[in-house]
Image 1 (cartoon, one colour):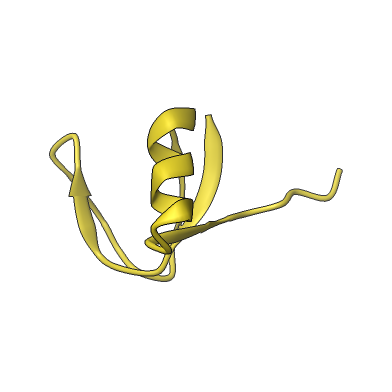
Image 2 (cartoon, one colour):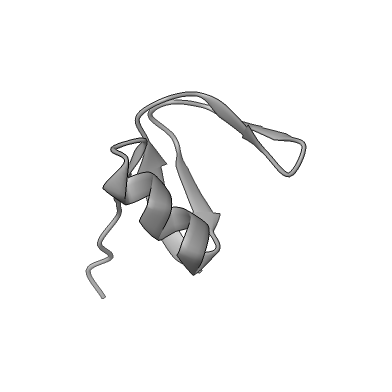
Length: 46
């Protein structure tokens, strides 16, 4: 799972994902969205 910040609003598995919010998404979907500029990866500083 990858944390992403959405650039657009979209529906995913029946859930509404809003622009500007951070969500945890499956790796393959998240990478596709990042490549398409629908979302950006959130880096965590631990």
